Length: 201
Ligand SMILES: [Ca+2]
Ligand SMILES: [Ca+2]
Image (cartoon, rainbow, N blue to C red; front, side):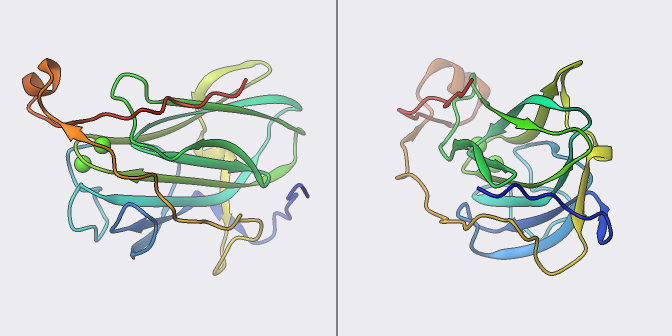
């Protein structure tokens, strides 16, 4: 697959962020710029958006990632609930499922060249209850950190080339229950999933 190496000419800081008022990336209600992905929404509605509430929404971040060094990059997402990540057109993380509260990390690796820029797409959905989304990287000489705003830009245009097609398909609705001790104690519903986070090393 072609690696998207980009010109700097039309790039502006931050990621293009599209917020959808459903958990399948269909009903776009707000488009804005997010400098990076580091959100703890808890039970609330994401501030600054037209989402109806903090349940059943989704987000697509698109932009351009600048690689500081040459080497193997490990990308890690921490999300409640589902997440998909593409870098340079490659699927790095595909965990479009309801996340276990205690195991929200998804991970994947890709080799990048220092000084080059790469197309980036991160998609996320929230089902019910708590919600958060964070995006980390690590690479030779750099321990895991949030991907900083300084590494993220996007094209100031109607669409970002290199974005892979989005199916919008969601796994069958899984059973949510509040009858386990922890969920009851926390006053919240937990969603059980039979799938575990997929890790690719
Ligand atoms: Ca919620
Ligand atoms: Ca949730």
